[in-house]
Length: 54
Image (cartoon, rainbow, N blue to C red):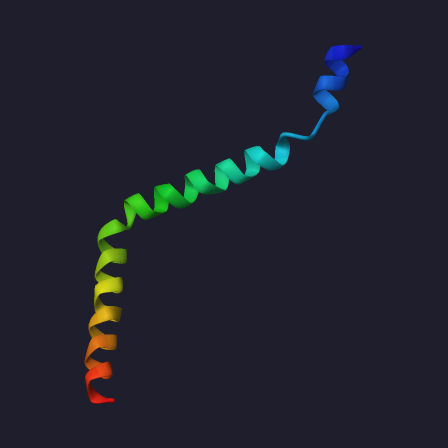
């Protein structure tokens, strides 16, 4: 009966879901690191240019 209760228990499901989401997000960041870096640099360059005009 103890094993059946173990199978029905869902306390750790939320933790597993969060871990899987983090793994997917980290994987996407690793895959698209070059594009993300370029985008962030472009945004900061634009901010710097616009700040000089104010």
